[in-house]
Length: 538
Image (tube, rainbow, N blue to C red):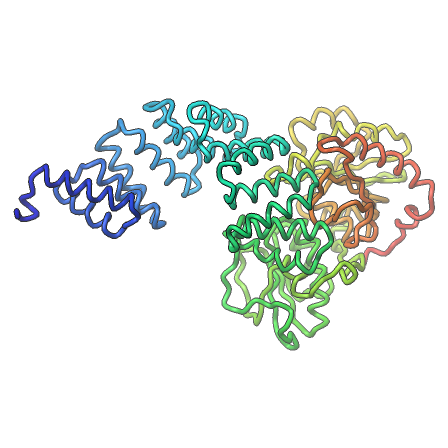
């Protein structure tokens, strides 16, 4: 046999084929060794560079994978599969724009390539260009109607376009071909949940879990549905699966142990840390005084916009912004794990309000800026744009037009982020006092809320702030509200001063707004809401 340095081209080709077979069979170490051997003879071999890059990508070595695949495309820039692999690496790096450009290059070379169309659609979903993504999935299915990846992704696109009933039909079609696919069953459960069909959602999640017991997204969906149904024991336990799904990247790796409610806190320091949105922090920070009552020194790490507000809260010894150096501590606990640690049931929710107050300096800074006219009612009609249910929980300001016609109420906009489509309508209602855009943080928001008679809000952070301050809260909720608002109730065990107005039909605010309008007119003729103005702030 000839020495390796003297191998003939035919022998190198055989070695390349062996490498490719090993790669296809999942024998990655063997494939990597053979691809490297090929490159020692043919340094510009597209197939060897590409195959080696794919292996590095599978192993999570993204920088090396990127270099290798780019080198492969320098060797042969007319290979659509190379651009497909390049797109996958950029996608894994969360550089979705460059992933999209890579897929575009591949499709220029192979316009009907189903795999590239499907991948391009997935990148478009990440970029929020959902209608274009749907077009790509439908193009892929026109070429290959049996492509299950494209079929499932078409369902995902329909769901993101807020067409859950159509998404369910697509998932059902895909499940006829793959009845045990855990991802499809989980996505189906999520779509059923959005249509407020919780028991069907539970059955779909249960099927996914039966197929794949450690599939965190299915466990998390099941937990959210159980919480919405008021099954707190199973719900909070299952909610701990969140770290294996969408929140995996946010899980903290801290040296101190996680506090799970069993360990004594007497004389110990516990770090509480925010993990999700502003509203989540405002809702679950209520547990801090309970920890303090157990003898703990409580340190809270929170979003910078909440630090000033929470620094004076009873039961918290110090508040740090995210990314600040941490002091020594004995235990830690994410805020949304506290209900599980305390074994919270509906009857044991720590619901005393107010449990926070605006800082004195913020109150002084904003005093005297509101008119004497009463009643004063705050308005918030949209939340964070990036929220995965923003299409349902937020609304256009124009939807609240029936309220703005109530002549005896002075409305105050607490909306910090006024969207482009709302600005003209807001400007046309000069009688609405615009103040929210001037807030620098939530301490400012709290200082204004403390001077109001009530707050009207959709399910966003300001709603939680109003509830935590003990202010009358008139909350507008979508058809299938977030789990924390339970189902079929017009009150909240978390916020005693809240009254809930739910959509009667999916994606239709008209009934809820009309009920709120009638309530608002009547409320200020009755003593309870008037008396709420005199409640102490803390």
